[in-house]
Length: 105
Image (cartoon, rainbow, N blue to C red):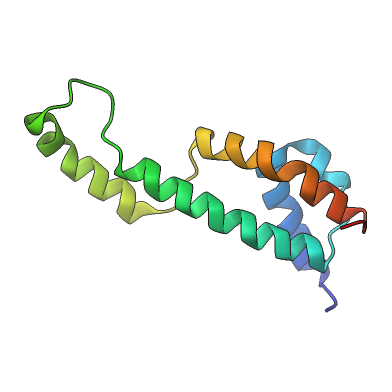
């Protein structure tokens, strides 16, 4: 599978978002794309879990009832990533994707 320059550029932007500026030097290849897909699936699952959590406060029935609208709004937006999720992905995936970019994975 040959990747277009546009696909490589978009992939690089995503990698920089998660892993920082050093990802700009990584070679984008089909294996990197495959691993990025797996990683983004994990990020989506993490984000869904975080969206469903009530925000800090005294957690009782009334608090949860007050939080329902906010939780539903976060679930509906679906276009964000929590720092906690980003950190977990960074720790778990950075080395694997970097090695894949070197053609060694």
